Image (cartoon, rainbow, N blue to C red; front, top):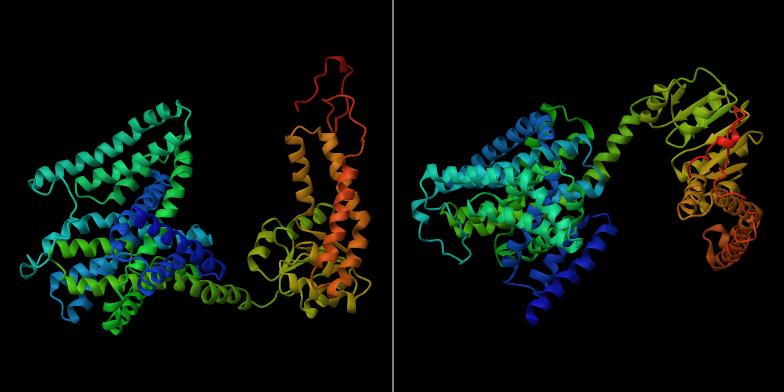
Length: 637
């Protein structure tokens, strides 16, 4: 028993140390888990023979993930994505399997074994790709949706693959494969074909019908107990039970869980199920990735490193070429095409499943399977690096190319107000000025922002507002004021310095990201500086006070006290900031002053403000339209 606790501690400690480090350096959590597994396994030897057993348990994280994926869909959603699901996903599996089979035959493998190898490498890593896409916020992009469609088809395709592999058995391998004692138990292995098919259809029907009619009744019964932990246990029981049922009829547990998720997608318990299963899914997926790293056989790798490395790179290159061609065929262009290509150019966790199944069914020799498992693991290891290449090489190139390929617009008019930067902040300023019939010239270096502004009929121009020639063309010499709302700290600071140096009579209004940036802008000469979140935070803070029972007028008074205190000490804070270490950071003296001002604010906000005479007095009341005030009802609080 002690050994199990020690091993569990080692796995958890490795994850706690490696994953935050990987995230900090922008490598992603998946690579952190894989590296942690390599360190505690092959390198330090802290874990060993139990890795394979733990990996079988951790694969349940993939089952949970597909259940949650199914919850996000519904039959209408599947039908809507049928073109990409069948067309893009089907072509990817067929073409990649054919290419893998051809290369394997060319390398000297018999056709049956080569076909199994092609099927194994046709699959990509659902766990790595979906988790990484979600972490990076790329799941809703065109490339992310296309990748999801392919992964979904691959997961469904595992079922016919598992049914087809036993038909490829080689007589010379029969009897040579040793049973490791972990053979799966199922109820259909010795049944006639038609009975087998009937049992499978019955099991799938039970999942669909039971999920639609019985599961809601079960959850209502559990909720009536009022015990949250029982609901969690029921959710886990549901996923485990479906996985067990699918295994008993020799189907993929992951597919059964996905099907159940789709059935429950419109259930009123959807969000509660997601909240209860998500932590278990994340932990088990992390454990799965650690076991992949820990299970690498370094002795085989040392003996066959050239073969493993060559095959691993070949898998990524061949799949990448096919995926890039499909991206062009289905018009997934630009950075989305590269995201689609790089995210799927690897083997996946189901590759281990098919590889083990192929060995058990005398299709792939044991010696070859050890090399192929290393190739699968290596390609999974390289996947986070492909995402890093996308972030740091592909995406910046396409962003800059999209803007740099276009020449700056010819500015055809001048105005007393110039707005530099028309993103989510600058657009509001432009709309307010236009509503008051004030002529403006709006500039931005992001074509998407310019197009958004033109959609609401605000005249705007594409170009880098920090360029002196564009500012001159826009009429900076005769302008009354310039609003600098750039979404770039350094460019905004340099622009303030430039304008105040060469056009000191122009009033400069600047957007700041935080207090330190506001001081930098003020030091550079900006006449008025507003932090982008200041007023919205004040308003939300007042709403928070009201929600906690503070009278709305009292909440307003307290926010006014906050503003007055800030304004009264703004010059003192700014002067102190300039004196301390050249203004490079706040320092302890500044922090001490700031804390004193917080105490003054606390005193001011708790002074005896005049309380409203009635609790139902609104902050503002419309003028009376009739002399029936006695019957008037106060507005609802």
